[in-house]
Length: 207
Image (cartoon, rainbow, N blue to C red):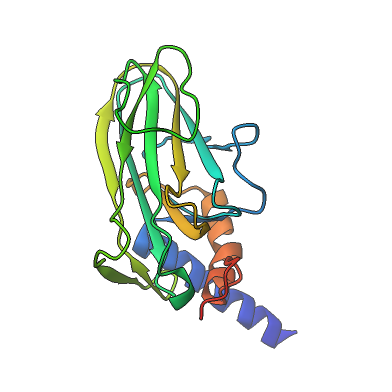
């Protein structure tokens, strides 16, 4: 019993330390973030999260939603774990909101009336990509494109992630950059951090 309690305390401290050091609350996609069942940001879009998600098919589009009532800074990024089996996924994403311009790029989803989008493209296939190591997850990632702008128009906003090359696979949607954590965030980190260390968030074997 004492061993179990000591192990639990160690995991708790490790999870909390990882959360506070890297400023990302880890989420794991257990059910597809579709247009019908999107990932809804319930706190501020400015609070940082790392959502370990995946495209289950080459045409899968993941949807993240948030509400804007006052001016906020929207930060979003697309990264991929640097595994040999994940060398090819190059996710794009689009920030979609009222009053934005209609993009030139073709989109794999329909824009709501009165909405536009800013499309954030990734590298092209075969182009070299930088990598970085993140102690929180004990993993190396392919760096990816990011969006970092203030938005002021009130209403429902969306961020769509997809793979324009229709390969599919695991990726990480990084939302927000502000270090602000609740007790629930700490508990979520406690639960999900060990899973990420053991690659249990992956749908593609890291080989």
